[in-house]
Length: 339
Image (cartoon, rainbow, N blue to C red; front, side, top):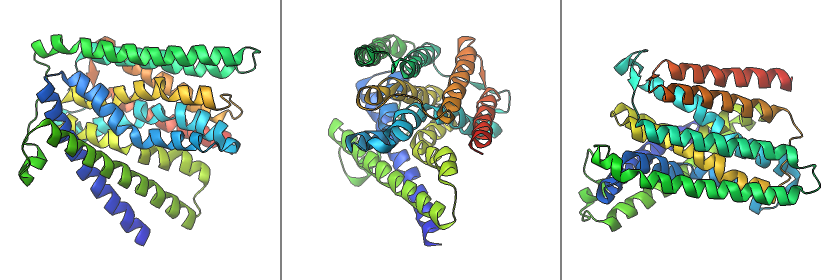
């Protein structure tokens, strides 16, 4: 009972911190006079991706080579975008189903969205193909080349996203804060320092309670004898991706589609480009278990479906239902293969 209470309390604080984070980001974007695309795809995406990003970084830094291959090299790194490309966008669509209907439009700024998805697909495919080069005699050199390309691609992505900001601002896609900065209600002046302070406080609360939530989920699973496989496949990924989902739901319900979608796709670019560098350079980046392959292929299918609809500038609420279905297909196939 105590552990369920902890889960509930963690959820409350995650929602509160996500609200604080969104509020501060909107003010930062407004003060910098940048587009919603930059705010969502870079600032929000990297910030809210930290909880699940820290897990593989800590594990790799700990040099626990016994479980690095499956849990870190493939599962934690290449598996992270799976939730974002399937369940996360599906939950977002559910949150506005009553407001917009099944055939309702979701209208993020199209140029930035298509750029996000292109860079993600490029980085993710590069990291995936690197799995099959590990038996080559020159695999260390190949790893270095691929890691360099991934790093440069993310740097190029940031440059292009920032470069497009001024034009988008002129077209009216600038970031606007709808409500006063929360810390100003505590008598702080509205300044860059106050905005950064609120961002930092919100992010620390977010990371702390996300970590506590994951620990509580582990404890509950142990007490009720839930399979570690089911835990790693279903429960933990949902918990670690929670910050992105909550931020995006809040923005989408406010009609800030570019911020909401950019938060998801920007995190996908970050996880598909930078995180694989750690695995490729510091782990045995090879596939010994076929189960992660299912998630990787489902991620690619879900992203291509997303990209297809983005290319037509016609994203409907029901389209993300397909992404949710792909998530269920992933679980179903993995359960069959596991048994």
